[in-house]
Each structure stands twice: as C-alpha cells, then as structure tokens.
Amino acid sequence: MARTIPSSRLKTTLLALGAAAIGALALPGAASAQEVLGTWLRENGESRIRLAKCGDAICGTVVWLKNPAESKSKVGQRVFYDMKPNGSNSWAGQAFNPEDGKTYSGKMTLSGNSLTTAGCVAGGWICRSVSWARAN
Image (cartoon, rainbow, N blue to C red; front, side):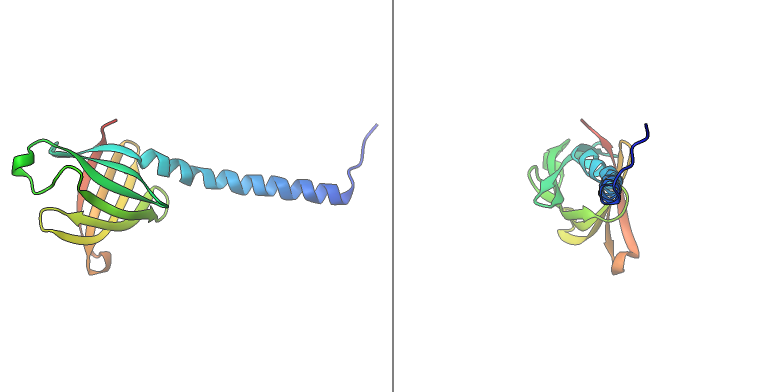
C-alpha cells in the first residue's frame, strides 16, 4: 500500500537535501585548501617552503635552502602571508621577496602537484611568477 508523506515533512526533507547539496558543493574548495598545504620545492631546486594554516589563512615559510650562505633567504623566514581563497584552487595575500626585501601583493595557483606563486605590483598588472613542485 502506498504511503503519503505529509507536506510539512516533505518540505523539511527537501530543505535538508538542498542544504546537503550546497554543503557538498563547498567541499571541493575545502579539499583544495588542504591539498596546497605541505612542502614545495622551487623550480630551480634552490629552496623549499612549507605552506601551513595561519589562523583562517595560509602562510608560507622557508624550510630549506640548497646554499644558505649564497642566499638572501633564511630558513624560518615567512615569505607568504595571509593567503586566502580567491577562486578555484587560487589564493591571494602578500608575498615577501627576500632578494629585494620588499613585500608585494601575492597570488598562488594550484594545479595538481604544481604550484605557481606570484608577487605583483601595479594592481596585479605586473607579476613575477615562480613554479614549485610538491616535495612531500
């Protein structure tokens, strides 16, 4: 025998399903934030940074240098600050360049096990990018 569902219960069920669907859509962004965390090797093999949670943002710190005596970077130096989600698999915040001692507006973009970081001036029109490979 078929059973009828009261309209109030049907509305509640539909609202719950809608909320679950919206929550599921939010998960890929959360997963991407987790994927960017970890240790990254610079394309030239000269340094590694570790991206980690910093409150509600992501920060990046130098954790290894191939030739510390020849580098203006220092192990333990923070080079990415306050990186917050800025679209799918991308973050925006600030980037410190140890080579010139200046802080720029920063961007990070994740694509699989490749990360591109950039420090920008002129409202993001002029950027210098660096590529990184996952090291862990």
